[in-house]
Length: 340
Image (cartoon, rainbow, N blue to C red; front, side, top):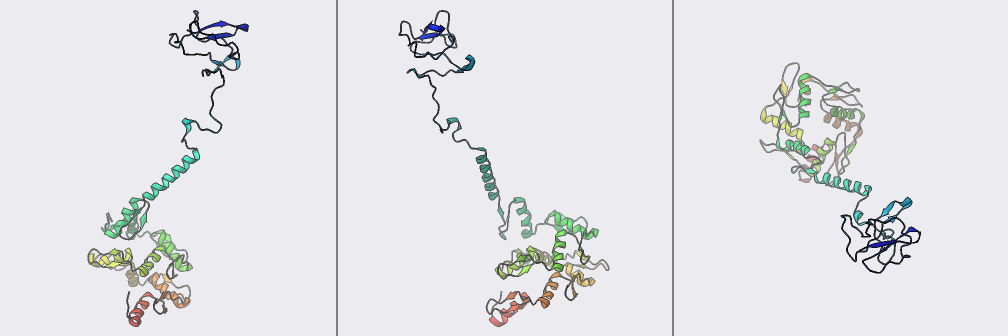
């Protein structure tokens, strides 16, 4: 049993067990304060009111400033009253493995980057990649010929809803995008941007193989297929393949009989807008050097080489250059006995 007596100055002196040796009054002279859990009979009581067994050494709580209880940590049996503290620089077990806010942010960024990379989707037909699967599914329609969006006016179908909206402007006559240089108007802004380069001569897209420059990325992509021989767009009716989707679209009208470009004057319809311009006599593409006009932008591009002297098509066998791709193909066949 625990017992105690008052020492000099009113200090509580503790002893262990009945008849056991009393603790040295000087061993804990610094531990001052009133008795803790002391019953009237001198029995040391636990929290549940039961007496503590013999051999369990209990000590009064440490007292902080103004007599408040600071800690209930027991004093070591050797009498050392100092509490154990982790060594300087050591990490608490409860905090081991914890990440700092910066580390958590970097971890999230790395995870997001990995997820974005894993979501990359590639077209099996042409190898083009997309970050979103929905974009890939839309792109695949250009290869499969799938066209789920139908025009309510003429029944023509499209692979994308945006293409349908652009087409409907043919029926309404809406051409909201107008060139400030020549006054020509367009259904979509991207066509206006490309058109204006015919006036400015800007060609920001360069072929890494031959150095030829283009006014639009789509024209560069189509040109590069001359080097690679790639023709990814295949007609499901006859099997003929093409370098670009627009050529396939125009070709398929030979099978379907579709002629979506009617003449506003006589009603005659055409499969290609350039054929309609030939019919109407419209020549919207004007050379800035000599003011000669053309029905297509490609015809104007070829004409400009008369002024610039540009000969972008080079024979890989003898180095002779030409202004048109058809000329270099003919040269290969006649002079070198080879063909593309």
